[in-house]
Image 1 (cartoon, rainbow, N blue to C red):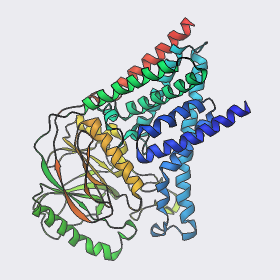
Image 2 (cartoon, one colour):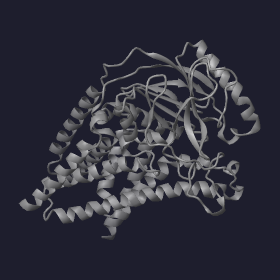
Image 3 (cartoon, helix red, strand yellow):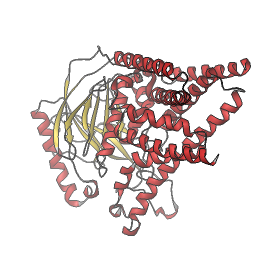
Image 4 (cartoon, one colour):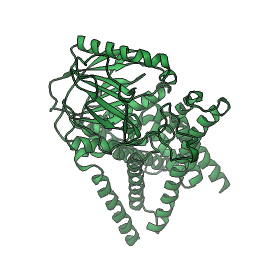
Length: 491
């Protein structure tokens, strides 16, 4: 027993490292063996917890770039401990969740089957994979989730990720859990010397068919003629963004970006999250529509929003507020005496309405402001309500390229799910166009200032995921539960 536990801990640690690489860089070649090791280690929930801890600490190490935090009032001696505590908390939360999943897997296996025949094992694996996939979807609607197994396929495997057109991110997570289970069972069969060739060939054939089907779903034939849209990447360091000098330079810089977009014959200009102060007026009437991140006051509450300044105007006439706020970074429960207002130069913010649908004089859009990009269900609802394209605005400074890679992977996933082009505009990047097929076109190099031009296509069709959301996964879960019950009766 002691040797088994030690082996499981090693498997959990190694699998966590592979999963961390997959979540940071994307690719089934990393995640599939990581999940195979998780299946092997999950007979001991502590080993599974180690998998989750290592995976998140490695893939979310960009959180340490929060240090130094002196610019938001954290004393210098406490700056790194605070940043490290946030990072470790995320890892601990992942450890608890994965450990609970492993415990549930053990409990269901004991409850559902007297003898673990192959049919019961398949139904058990399907049920546990679906529980993981649906849990990721639910977590994405909460404040404490960024990227999971579902988003780890991109950018490395766009063909298999095409299945998200019908099954969404939860379906991709479920599929990858099943691939990991197949690898684990094939490895066990190889050690026994019985049946491994058949298992390997059947699994490879299914994987090939899944890639072919996913690729076929990426075809898009309802695209409109392209619309030229300008994206401004100001590359303003967040730590000095609210200094007097930067605030003095901002209006002229924005006006120059508008003039440059007009020269490029753009239909409108998009600027990143958190750019405009509350009530900010342009220096001159806008030569073309401006969609810019900024702040506004509503009944004494400050909100982060996407503001729309129409052509010929100087003030915003339409807006959509950010709904999903970053814990600690933008929102904290009220504390006695207001001793801490969040790790933000603007203090605490209040959330807006849940809908991500932006109605403005231009084509209707589904909007994700930074962290909201992880919630695919909210954007799918906006598309079902009539959005013709997706817009993601963000400010990812002072974080490194590692976070930008995860951001663009989620952007690709959201485009595939909804069959919509997505324009990403961020302070330091990524500023890119993601086509409805998930193909990415970089507009500007990271951490550089400039105005880029994107050929945006509008779409009218509704994808399977937009129409059905998680209904197919729930149906499969009921099927797996019935299958497990039937296996118990037969045994």
